[in-house]
Image (cartoon, rainbow, N blue to C red; front, side, top):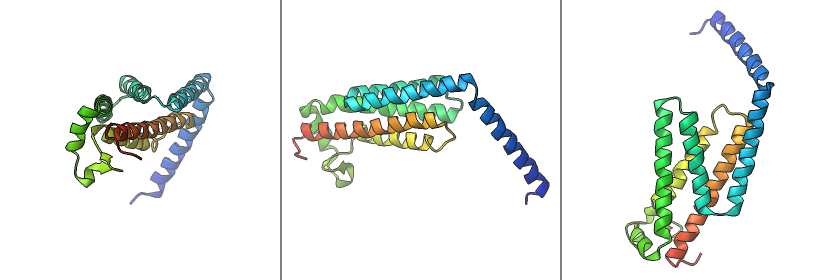
Length: 179
């Protein structure tokens, strides 16, 4: 059981940390970073609004590569980002298949169980990749981030939702399924 003295020491340390964080937030460097992140959110929103699936996936790939190169500070984080890049590669590959109805019918034929389908279309590797990356971003959003960083994550999540819908439309078109 924790002693009162230990808890008092902890509370004092938490207070010092809060003061240090507030002081850091007031620095010109932090303000520049906040503006840069706000700009990233705006650009990311614009990419999603254009509705170009390839651009949405390329943008997410650029974000993940940036995170891997600049922010990965543990083997677990590096492994997660490597898996994210694999998922994005699977999405790219899926887009290549779904744009060719003949090829995509083969993908469709191996996803014939009801549990392997969503709204009548296969839950293929690309769909699973969208789901996995969206879940990664949601988990990242639960960490200690600035409001601006959370804004960028929110735009990335929105883009993945848009991308998933666009991919689903491409699936229905390839399989001649009327929505």
